[in-house]
Length: 280
Image (cartoon, rainbow, N blue to C red; front, side, top):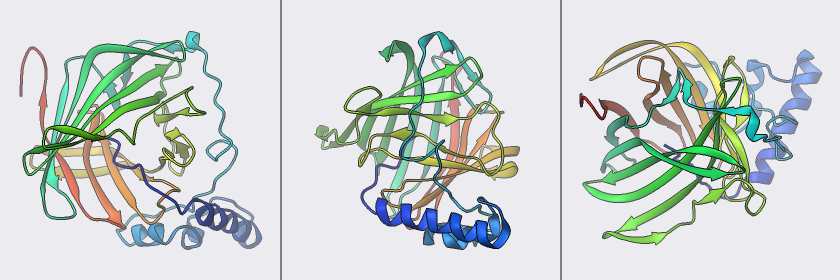
């Protein structure tokens, strides 16, 4: 699920980020100290009140606007088996929750048997569909591939917003290598607390970012209890006031729960996992 495609506060955010770096270096001699989190976006300070220690977010050469990853098809492998983000064809994760306006929200993420060639790489196609109060509102095909180290890359999406069964917008669509768009990493091979990474990059359109907050969160939902979950903080410089937490479990190979913690409200929980041969 890629809930973010948000619009402009980018320059203000960048200024605040580099201001944070300068203050941190002067006071502590460090550029990524949790004590300086209040220097970054106001939303991140609000997120800290959720009980999680939030690191200051710093844009640098590895995750900033100048990101220019070298993509060599020879460095990518199949299948996608990162334990936090394992995409086995035929598997479906079903989520349910409440959107900010109170509507009932249902999301289905299906790993298809299809592939799409992007930058010479046969990416795995994942279909994400979103229903609100029973009406299909989004129908998206996302493209992922895993490198030899185990990092899962995000290469773009074919996104459609629906209304009364008809497509009303494809504004969220992008493809790596087209119009300057660049791929990002959706899941690290060896995630480390405090890491900041860019998930996608099409200037002004798709600039989602993530940060690792924890590797040991415990989550209890209707489907069960999950220990040692990976917790990320997701946001975009295009709308830095909005922050979302996601909790990934190796037991399910994907997201267990996600919730917006600043700027907007709403929460989704995993309610079912289905497979081709045996539906659960």
